[in-house]
Image (cartoon, rainbow, N blue to C red):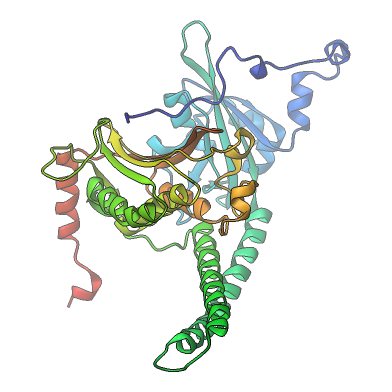
Amino acid sequence: MWFKSKKTDVDKEDPSKRVAVSDKLAKDQGLSSEFILGAIEDGIIMVGADKIIHLFNPAASQITGWPATEAVGLDFHSVVALTDSHGVIYPETTHPFTRALGTKTPIRDSKGFLQTRGGKLIPVSLIVSPIINPTTQAVENVVGVFRDITVEKAEEAKRSEFISTASHEMRTPIAAIEGYLALALNPRVSQIGPHAKSYLDKAHAATQHLGELFQDLLTSSKAEDGRIASYPAVVEIGEIVAQAAEAGRFNAQKKDLQLKYQVSSPKEVSGGKVIRPLFYAFVDPNRLREVLQNLIDNAIKYTPEGTVTIALTGDDKVVQLQVQDTGPGIPEEDIPHLFQKFYRVDNSMTRTTSGTGLGLFISRKIIELYNGHIWVESQLGKGTTFFINLPRLDAQQALQMQKNQANVVSPLEQH
């Protein structure tokens, strides 16, 4: 199994990328592009390859506080200053406009804050799309569309707080019920008949599932508002993947499934010494292990027969993890929604298999913490493959970062 790049959504010549205009609209001179841009409530900014603003609609003026006549002609950094949640200005290399100009791909960002002309920070949702010259394939301009999401963020915070509080409060009584059921099932504590035991076994399993649900709700709430605990360090990804593969082997064997682990080649890694490349990345090993375990468990859970293959590959810049199964596959219309909260594919297998619909949402949030990307490709009747791309560190970078971490003194160690 080899390194694979993410497929583009549509081909450049795809007719779906063309704008369709009715004859009535074409004849109506009053509905000019300037009129339409002025009527849109989202801010729209066009920036050229020279990084100068060439278009600025009225909504952009209202959101940023910059009059359009003053904004046009300025470097976009002066007008679209973005910060993170701590008020730190985005570096040049990570600014969405810069990335879109350099990568030729649309860039989305809903975590940043726009610093208005008056110095106020407002949360915005932004997408920057490149305009590519069909002849030279060079990016001539990029168009940014953004909106103020202050209200949405406030509502989201209230929802997260409610879910977090409810989940936390419910975990205590659920844990107590589970504990008492475990005591009732302990033959050293109580003697019960086989029928009563079967009922208690079902109640105990249901209670454990409910506890997992509340834990997932709590984790998803923390992931959504950036409170999820993460302690990244320089790690060798191969060790983590090997551990996750070994942990999943027992569950695969219980279903008579074959579980394979491949590294940079189609050959399975088995006993004995195996020479493989070292893949370093800056991640929290426990969080990455959590994501891998979720993907492997899902692959085993939804594969009636066949093989689950875990692969580790990459290139000079990317470490790629793959989890492939020979299950029934996922309908194409469901794929764009898989990483949304509470979304589950509706088919006969998912109806008989327990799940919260939160695992993939949490997995995406965790991978994004480390500037990674997760996606899925699937064909009905042929199986599904989940891909994870993480920024790769070369050996020299990994060594230097490890030295820097070793030199950092914990506040608890200071006197």
